[in-house]
Length: 231
Ligand SMILES: *[C@@H]1O[C@H](CO)[C@@H](O)[C@H](O)[C@H]1NC(C)=O
Ligand SMILES: *[C@@H]1O[C@H](CO)[C@@H](O)[C@H](O)[C@H]1NC(C)=O
Ligand SMILES: *[C@@H]1O[C@H](CO)[C@@H](O)[C@H](O)[C@H]1NC(C)=O
Ligand SMILES: *[C@@H]1O[C@H](CO)[C@@H](O)[C@H](O)[C@H]1NC(C)=O
Ligand SMILES: *[C@@H]1O[C@H](CO)[C@@H](O)[C@H](O)[C@H]1NC(C)=O
Image 1 (cartoon, rainbow, N blue to C red):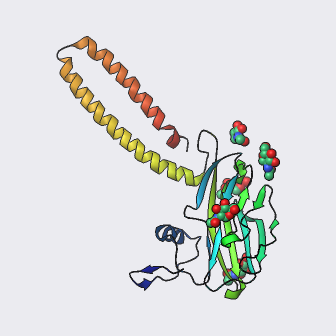
Image 2 (image 1 turned 180 degrees about the vertical axis):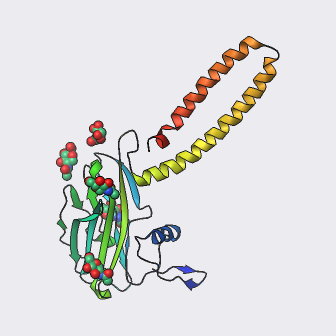
Image 3 (image 1 turned 45 degrees about the vertical axis):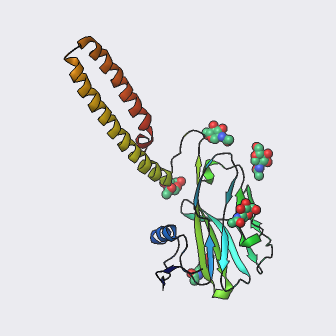
């Protein structure tokens, strides 16, 4: 697949795992590469509750065809790569014999429609992290291709400690908090202004009214704050 930008073929970007490559691949959906490509789907991450069973998607595409395509899945365990499974696909459409190196892993792609996805059964918090789907097509003189899929394992209620989720959560949470803060401030200002007006007429009602509002205010703040605070 080739990406064209106003009729100009885009140059091949750096390794897909670089930040730039990731950003561009997110922006463009695909990037121009000759030969083999590995895809982890449109959304290369997933949040799942511990104990559930998840599909780690990966497909490959090659415009020059494949022959003895070697592929594997690796898990980035705190910097060291752990092989999850690997195999060789002799040719297009042939179901590979996959060796599994990690427990609770099942190969479900069966190479149907170039699908080399795996299933992760009964995930635990230790299963969270980066999974790399790697492919090498001998037809291309052993060039390496890979894509990263991130699995985020969460507790039933709250998001657990994870860089990606924290970034997302703090960005989204920050925006929501800012918006809520703004709205609260606006409402509060209006409220205070109206109360100041009222105060001139009736003092008793005003004091009880303000007490209620202050409880309401701190209550809403406590609701919106815990996520950023936990960092
Ligand atoms: C998920 O983890 C929480 C906290 O460790 C535990 O209480 C809960 O039972 C787990 N859920 C499943 C489905 O394993
Ligand atoms: C890697 O593991 C060590 C010890 O298990 C820990 O101290 C360190 O913070 C970990 N690094 C990352 C990036 O998670
Ligand atoms: C996943 O958990 C279920 C229920 O606890 C169990 O029956 C099943 O054998 C487990 N599957 C694997 C692959 O461990
Ligand atoms: C790959 O195979 C799995 C299991 O059969 C399926 O759930 C998934 O949708 C397939 N992915 C693609 C892109 O065809
Ligand atoms: C491809 O990856 C393998 C390790 O899996 C490495 O030994 C080899 O040098 C890499 N080849 C290129 C062209 O980067």
